[in-house]
Image (cartoon, rainbow, N blue to C red):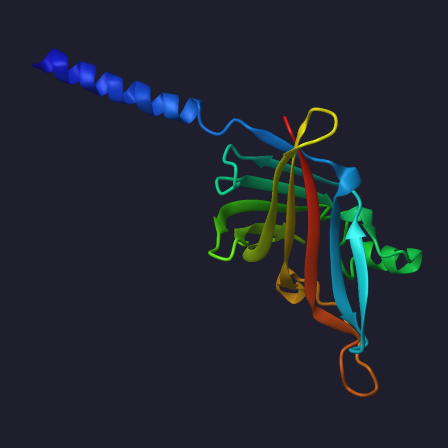
Length: 198
């Protein structure tokens, strides 16, 4: 009886180890020439300033056709911020904002990637920026999986949402004569990602 029980336990252990070892195996990496990490923020109340980060890596592990099992990791180099204005970019890299020497990276790690009834997705994860880590919820759209012209396999994602920069210690601002703040608190994120399988 003891031998049968021991065999059953060993069998269950083997099954559990196998399920871990042979879980998600399909790795997707970003095609930077067809991807953008963009953002926008209000300026002087009446307009927006836009920009993007030029240096980043995105790795996704997913085996399912609809990506609902996706594990997403994004690492952004803060020194790569680009708003097409050298003076502004220099200020954004300074201690007033990103302090790139002390905080060289922004990192996002997904926790859930859930498909909604309308076909769009909800992406939940942790965002580490400026030495602060917080849970965030973003919107996403999965473009599907296709075979490309060169025999490879590609997938596409669009991710968007909003953050309060003050929650990450990015509180620099100035007061206008009319009383409003010159730079908005809300930062709107809009990322377009093209992925290559393997």
